[in-house]
Image (cartoon, rainbow, N blue to C red; front, side, top):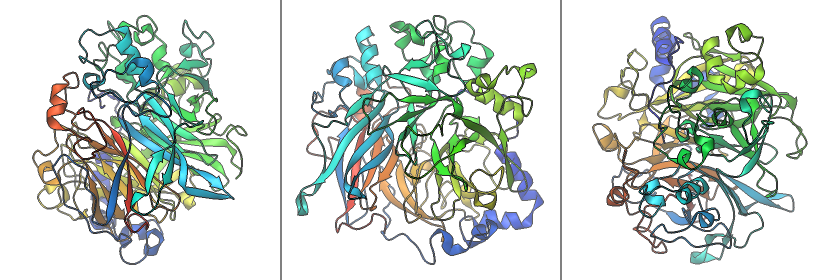
Length: 639
């Protein structure tokens, strides 16, 4: 669910301006951009070519062609299994009814809508993580009200509001590989003591500098430290202590601001009517006039301990409030916890959080304050290929009362305005971030930005429909460093027919609108796409086809298409078992028609997935779902 209304009107520089200055000022760096993906770029970071994959391609499958049909396709030699679709029970609960007549209480025990980021948590047997038994945490980003309810949005009611809220949030399910030979299949363990649904109504704790702040207090929570629910859960993160981070993205669309929104509300896209959702009609929390501070309690990173179903989730305000796409966790050289985050909207920023305390291997989820006390930074990309992390800390960089920030709570609640003030670099929709396990390079997808108006040598598109992937190397290889070197990993687009890549930045299969990123343990980069419905299979995107998943060898520069999705879908969410022999992938919103989510008939005309591909599925409504992909010979996926 994307919001195209521009909310960042600051005078901060745009990335394309920096790329243009950089290209004009250095022939060497132009050559690196033209090389795009090869050894020259690795040398720029001071890395030998083999550091990110060695000689020759690390990819071992035959790529598949782009597709436009209503099915999931994978390479020869691989199997597909449908595991967990919207409406499936998490444990011993009600089954999905194809006419969407499940009640709100039933939905609270079933898979939510629109699966997004997810993570596999293995059980540990004799000190070894299992690749056949674990927990899956799965985000449910938003709802298609036309499909969720009998009669769609007609006769909107309190019951429909509750069902919609219960279709949001997170699933925790227990899964196990069972059987043998041709009968070997992943199954959801039912019953399971770990299974639970976290929804837009689940109580959770607020911690960090903004907990208890005046702007976090409401009539129902006068202390400002407890909130009901999480929503707009997009990408995710995994902590070293074994917990799950779920990220609240487009939270603004759930709030109705009647009248004239404040400047702070406008900066986050809160406006009259929201995104057309009608929760505020039956839940006053989402009516800004009734409860002006409730919106401040969303837009955070939420931590969930999947192994402790009785432990409430926690919203960590130290990580800042914005439209979090993900929260990628790594460790600094001294053991401090570092979290990379993108703010997914046109002209927004890339952030980094560094904890005060060091993580010690073997520590439990309750033994440290790693996500509660630390410093939030925002990225400033410089024209010479260098960059700086600027602290968003009260009392530093003009973040003071004279500029509207009375304390650190205000800095974090209005992190976007703080980043505006310190001169952060405007980016083209920063989304997923991944850290290369061997080299420590950091990769970030910049999905697209149709509002770009400036063309330059490095980005020769005034209308950035295709997006690109940026990468950086922290100084001295230390994730907590204050400075970094950066480069463009790939400019996306139709390399055969479009001006987007005449300089050879794509080597292999074409794609656009990169979104999800995942490094497997061997250092292969998996890329998932989210082409907007209005562009899919039109113009140059017609040659690229439906949304897909590709694999890149970051040393050789080769990119191969591994999966194509059904009509109207997004491919998002990717996790693997420890042995890399099982991939879990999400298919989101098959059949979605832009601007027509309230018309149940139109999505049905676009897609009948997954019922049209998997015989065990009943009911014709399109359903987001989790798939499992395996090699037929049981080997490592992707090799």
